[in-house]
Image 1 (cartoon, helix red, strand yellow):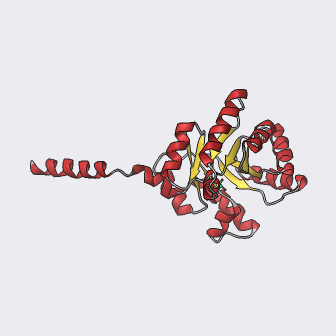
Image 2 (tube, protein in one colour):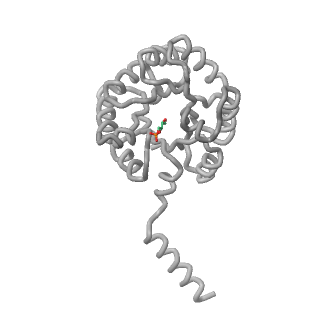
Length: 217
Ligand code: E4P
């Protein structure tokens, strides 16, 4: 499973990159705003800064919601850097745009997906990635992981090449369950990735090994 980091924070992106296990980055307008990145010029520069840290797919979200607007914005984003993936919302105009981008060879990430039907449409349109938001479903007492499983089944039935990018990951168990049910990619905060390191037996075992080594030195 590929690991993407879900943030626009450059220090956190660098920290994850330095671990040697990072495959890409996802951002959205809220994550940009959280870092105080506003205005088109600054946002574009920020995408370039991210691309300079990570050599992997970097999702950049369009703001337009009409077909022509999405195409114009998406084509400009795609021209910024070879690693940019145009993130398009799951709306009718978005699906039309994903179909257009797919024919042009522009990579896309269909975002704000909350049902298997929406994921089926994204695959049919030729999206490179589909982003089911599992944490936000869990937040409203709906089973986010079940959605990932349903999409996996449907995509496997028809050998769709669209990659399932499990998004809205909140914690390490989400990552592990996504790996079990066969998500192609997960995108989560740095805390969820760092959480995978932790085990008390690793800590106590290492402490003991070092203490025993030091007895003879
Ligand atoms: C990433 O592509 C999504 O925009 C993101 O994972 C949403 O996460 P959130 O539900 O924590 O805002």
